[in-house]
Length: 327
Image (cartoon, rainbow, N blue to C red):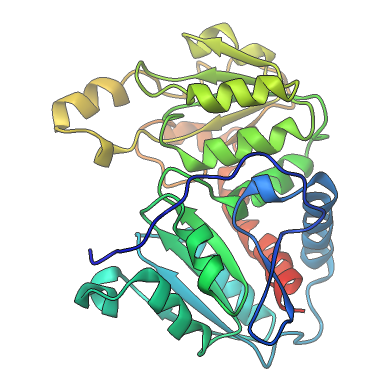
């Protein structure tokens, strides 16, 4: 794909009062949003509260009417890309984009670092999605404008996590709740980001996954060191009635060598109305989407289903993020 340069794994845990800060060539401090690990609870709470105000009152002015947002999506995306575009439009700004690696100069061998340097000259902020873990962190080191990570391989997806937390908080307190994570927890960057964020709120995390797709041991150990209770289950049925939130993720077909192997694993769980019989009345079922077969469409009509509302919440949350890095 023409990608060159070193990609770094996530840095060790660190507490930062705001998003990652660097300085551009003029010496002006820039905010990046690269990883949930860079964000402390006050910053997250501020984004959630801003999003709530935006959703309630909308934006009556165009605070970003002189700003341009560059969307560099080198992986397929519908919700994340369109919600960032919609967020920027509602704030009065403009978006420009590159649709794929094949449509960019990276197909000619240009490095990501050079691409970021060039695009920094065209826009006031960059939203990057890339298949390589650590790409967004690398981009922030070469950008002269703020960078927002829209997903980097199996690494992090901070904007998804912020809208997940916002959606939960619409119905429940974030502190001390029981959250079940089910599906591809090994490669699922949404699950990784959410699990870490929940550790800031002392929630209990229940993990259920097919063999070989468990939450990475390094992350599980890290969460436990932070005082978070991580409980492993073999069957969703044994814990479903104890949950406040069920976070469902799809099995990522692209990770499997053949269709037979994928279908063997993908058929190992499915959320159905029957499974949800007797659950806590306030249970909410979330999914970052797209879904395949892991949630029966009949669940859509139940009061527990919040995944379409969750997707809609991407606009006010990303509006709050854009205002944070651009104002």
